[in-house]
Length: 319
Image (cartoon, rainbow, N blue to C red; front, top):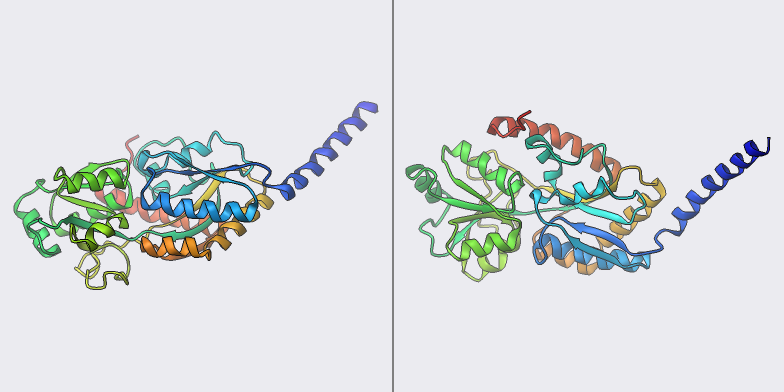
C-alpha cells in the first residue's frame, strides 16, 4: 500500500512540475540553428530574429551555423535534441523536398514540431555584368546552341534555386551544368571569379546587381519585385516556374504546447520589430505568416506538390 501511495505522489509531482517548467521557460540560452553559412541573407535575418526574441524572453538566443545538406542540417539535428524548447532551427522548404530525393536522417512530420512560418525568399538568376547575355531570351538562345556549356551555382542540390532552374531549363528545352555550393558566399565568389557562368540564389546578390557588377535576368516569384520591377519573373517569360519559398522555425517532436506558444508569440512579435522588418526589406523577403498548425499543413501540401515536380525531373530517391 505504501509503495502504491508513493508512486502516486511521484506521478502527481511530475505532472505538476511539467506545467511549472513551461511557465518558467526559458531559464537558459536557446540555440537557434541556421542551416546556412554565416554572413548570408538567411543568417543575417535569423540574427535579427535572435536578438528580438532574446530580448522578449529575457534569454540569449545563440545562432549556430550548420551549413550543408541543402539547408537540412538543422532538421537533422532535431532528431537528437531534447524537446524542451532550447534547440530550434530554421526550416527552409528543402526540408519537405530532400526526403523525396534521397534518404535523410529525419522525417519532416514525425521528427519536427512546427512553431511558426515568418517569411520567404526572393530568388533570381544572375550573371556577371560582362556576360554576353543581356536578358533571359539571349541566355536561353545561347544555352540551346551550346548544351551543358553554361554552368550555374546554387546553395545546394535539392534547394529551390536548384530545382527552379532545372524546371525552367526543362520547359525551355536547354541543358545547363549545375554546381552546388554550401551557401551564398561561395556561390557569389565563384560567379564573380569567373569559375561559374550564372548564379541561382536568394537576394544576397542585390548589392552586386545594384552596383553594376552583376546582371539580374529573372526572378522566380509569383509577382515582380518592388525593387526590380523591370525584371521579369520566369512566369512573365512564359515558363510555369514559380517559387515564393516560405520558411519558418521548428523544434524537436514532442514539445510542450505551452512552450511552443511562448516561442510562437515571441517570433510573431519579432516580425514587427523594426530591425527584423529592415532585414526583410534588405533581402526582399515578404512577410508570410503561418502558425504552427497551418505551417505543418502547408508542409504536407508542399511535399505532395514537390513529389510531382521531382518525379517529372527524374530526381526521385532510388530505393
